[in-house]
Length: 216
Image (cartoon, rainbow, N blue to C red; front, side, top):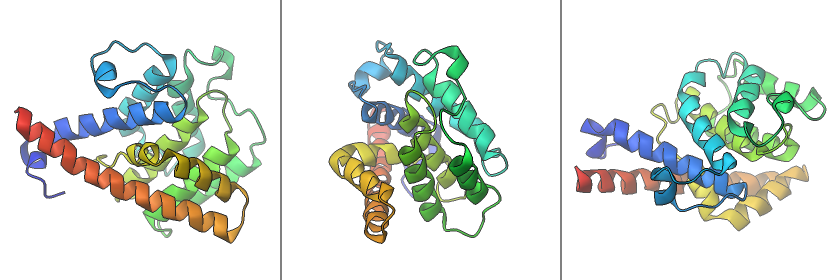
């Protein structure tokens, strides 16, 4: 957060972090494309386009997330899944709403749970439940990122945790599966992975900042 690029070029750093988050999130859904190609606007894959819409829309959902998480999840799905699932399925749950309601209750007004822990649980629950059709993982990762931003862990939206997940994708998939077992060991495995992904994403800020300074 003390990087020189953030003093005068913070907007560029945030925009690049958001782009990288979107590209990595789409890749984790199976839509793998080169970052420069996406930056150049030549990629029309609907999953990538949805991830880009989600990344762009996160800023406008930060205040609403802790007040109306169910509403925000539906909005994220509309952004992520347009062009991927039928219009009638956008924003609609595909399974039981009970566990989603429990998760929403955990998020709403919760200023007690440490933000990193809460974000990890939000992500893991949504990736386990996959409560929406289509690219539900994009929704899960965005909801976790919203948690980090709204709870003050990452107020400027610079920590592209998705990059960390993609860089350790086998571990990401394995630890998410371990979490889904509901065992203490599974939970520990997921939390260790999530912390590692955040560290990688924090290092990415430095890399982005260095690149911005080299090009201005």
